[in-house]
Length: 111
Image (tube, rainbow, N blue to C red; front, side, top):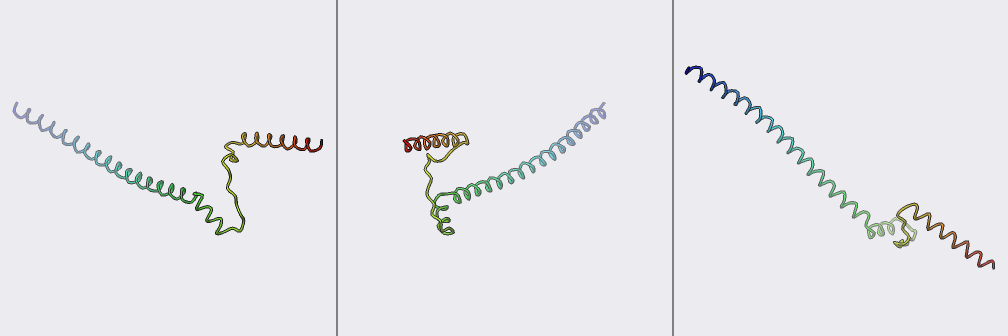
C-alpha cells in the first residue's frame, strides 16, 4: 500500500515536471519571438519617422523654391489653390466652361 502511494506520487510529480519544463521552454521561445518582433517594429517605426521627416523637408515649398533657383534659369510662379484640380472630372468641367467662355467672347467680338 505504501509503495503504491509512493509510486503514484512520484509518477504524478514526474509528469508535472515534464509538462512544466515543456511549457517553460515554449514560453521562452514565444518571449524571444516577441522581443525580436518588438525590435523589428521599433526599427521600422524609426525608419518611417525618418522617411516622413525627409518627405516633409524635401517637399516643403521653401526648399523646392531654393532648389529651383539654384539649378534652373527659368522663373516659376506659384499656383493658386483655385487652379489645382482634385479629379479629372473637375478639370474637364473647368475646361468645358473655359472653352464655352472663349467661344462666347469670339462671337461677341465678331458682332
